[in-house]
Structures are given as C-alpha cells and as structure tokens.
Length: 158
Image (tube, rainbow, N blue to C red; front, top):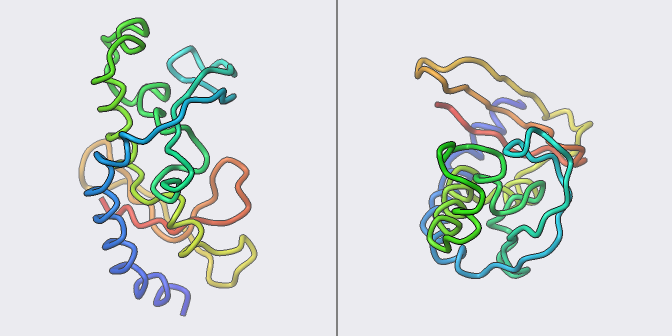
C-alpha cells in the first residue's frame, strides 16, 4: 500500500515540480536578504552567519525550507573557479545560482507541506542507491532532512 501511495502521487509531484521550474527564473527576482546561520561548504564547512538571499514570503513554497535560496553557491555545487568577491559583485551570477538551486530543488517546501508525511507514518519508506548514470543517485520514498520533523516526498529516479 505504501509503495502504491507513493506511485500515485508521483505524477502530481512531477507536474508541480515542472511548474516550479518554469516559475523559478521569475521567482528569483523577488528575494530578500537577511542573516542566516548554517554550515557553509564553500568556507571549509564552517558554521557562519552571513547575509543570504531567500525568496519573499509569498513565494516560499518554491524555496527550500532548510537552506537559503543561494545554497547553490554556498553549498559549492558549482563555480569552483570563481572567487567570493566576484560572486558578491555579480548580480547575474547570484541570480543564476538562485535559479539553479530552485531548479535542483523544485517546489521543495510545497512538496514537504502538501505531499510530506509525519516521521512515524506507516506509509513512510525510503530507498537510496546508485543510478545507472555516473555520479547520480536514486532517492525515492520519503526523506528526512536537517532536523525538520516532516518527511518530504522524494522522487529522484535518475
């Protein structure tokens, strides 16, 4: 039953994700900057407080509830040859990093709130393994993340 429930939700979650990806370039124009404390991979995995971009409150359903909208940069998911100074002074690079992060994690908060499960739900299950595509993992079921009490629908098949 729990696998069937996950499979029945997949087309809906996929559709919401695609809509979020289409909207992300526009949504990334509406950010607010505020102090945010987290572990920053780009700074040697130090716990620091920095001014970080987040989507404005009415777009938070497109954002990640456990990271800032600029986590693509601070999490070191790309641009290893670019300096922090260049990033700080390049509105275009900051914008691209926001869009890349939201596309990587499309409708993340929405998925957790509307398709998520309580941690003790009998429908909760998870599979994580290697994909046939080098460097990619399969992550399906429901996953926990960074101390958030609600499990998020996971549907990364590739």
